[in-house]
Length: 179
Image 1 (cartoon, rainbow, N blue to C red):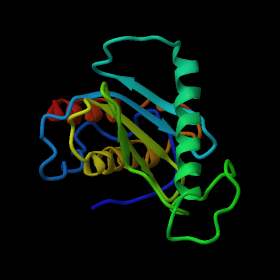
Image 2: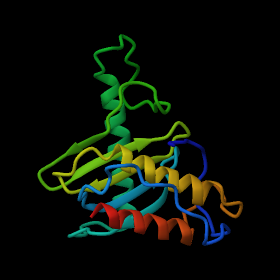
Image 3: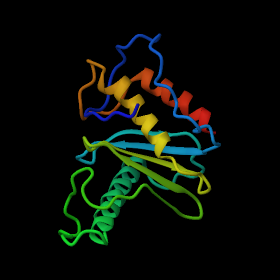
Image 4: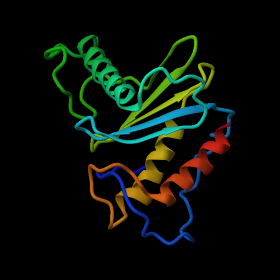
């Protein structure tokens, strides 16, 4: 079941025997996960994880700032051009989660950016191969891992980088099923 909640990082307190949430059906489709970003609502990168990034052109801090800026601009732009709403607001004004028109992904000739935002404002961005299909279920599963191993961890301080070994272990295991 897909659930939303607030929070962020963690230090492992959950016993290793805790089973990971079940993977959504049909997610072992050969998706080529390259990079995952997790941002809180304030734009702080809580997690940056690479698996198959062919080329690094920026330092990680610069890369994270550019990614959040792109995300902020795309959300603002999609809300501004939403044909179903007469009230457009100002371009660049922060939107609440679920407010306005939303986007789930975009692709270029070299990658596909997949996006999920929780009601609490946690943003997950998964960069995949451009021919990868819809990754919303994949992102929901990753979010469920985040809730299970990060948010529910009593040692995790919200808003700090995610340092949970169990979360990283289950995330890596799950991503291996996508490749």
